[in-house]
Image (cartoon, rainbow, N blue to C red; front, side, top):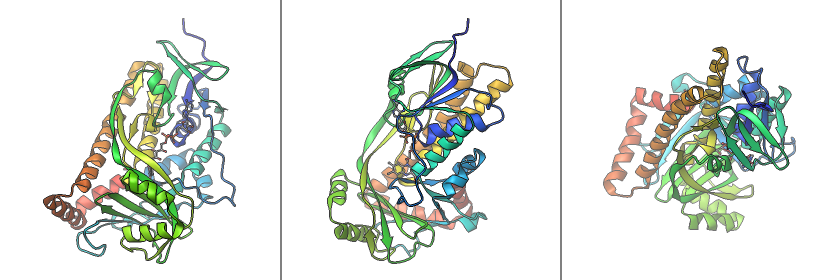
Length: 399
Ligand SMILES: Cc1cc2nc3c(=O)[nH]c(=O)nc-3n(C[C@H](O)[C@H](O)[C@H](O)COP(=O)(O)OP(=O)(O)OC[C@H]3O[C@@H](n4cnc5c(N)ncnc54)[C@H](O)[C@@H]3O)c2cc1C
């Protein structure tokens, strides 16, 4: 006998990725009949127009934009003026930005209007939650504290309730409690770096270009914002990260100007700052009995290529796609066949991306003269070989 279910799908964690799963489920024709709950202790609220841009922004790929458009969330994201970026400029710290080995990706080379958008995380999460709730998702503001998995149903425990579902989606982030409760193991290590973030005003126009310079201590990225400022993601030693967050505004602006080789002229601090530890991680499996892991709960990558949430959106789309296929075939959407298809496909893709980013990180962390020469030549080579460049651009767009 099938256990009584309160919901078909319970999603634990309403960050950008969990909220995307919720919105996709209830707005997609193949899955719209499902009863869905989204459990999130701190649901993102749509920012008020007068609120300053939050510190946390992400480079969203075209594929991510398409997902947000498909569920009807993109117009709300647009209200916060995400910045469409048209070029990506990547260079080695030992070379000048205008040298022959600087890698320049131009959207126009691929016949595209842009390479993606720099958008505010909380605006994206809030827009997705808003769409999900408007289309019938039940939002419960509480943490999930307990999980039981069985062949015919899964149960999650909230503060005062226990809910039965056909499938539980763990989207509760890097330190996923549900992953631990389901005894899903994983592999990963901490990078010897932390990322410092903040917004700065620049003397020169960013020209809608995202810039990244690889220094021996880690990459420093300046991402363009629609108001003319740039958003900094500076991965460096934990000691330097602590200093950068603690120093006065003038010293901080001067440090970022120096580290970015003055590429945008003098930079001036224009926001609070924060730092984040960096790790890489892959769950050994993305599924368990009636459980699917998505987003940071399943994988973590270095932010050097701005891929984390884009990969998470890929998980969301793939999982909802498989659920839709199962429903169309009259199959149980929470059974091992459906989940297995999701888990195998996404893990293969994310492991590949994780390995590529980790390889890139090591390549740039290595200070041997031969490696330094090779990577400069490599950047220059990608820059000059058109098909190789198109391949990279396609990947940046999320194709
Ligand atoms: C400095 C930095 C820069 C980055 N830049 C980019 C970028 O440019 N592009 C990009 O694609 N990615 C980027 N990333 C990665 C991106 O931020 C993450 O991949 C993304 O936020 C993960 O989203 P998520 O929804 O999986 O997890 P989270 O955002 O961590 O959301 C998890 C949610 O689960 C909730 N939760 C936690 N515990 C429970 C529980 N027990 N029960 C219920 N809910 C729970 C939390 O409240 C939270 O809302 C960057 C990361 C860093 C650190």
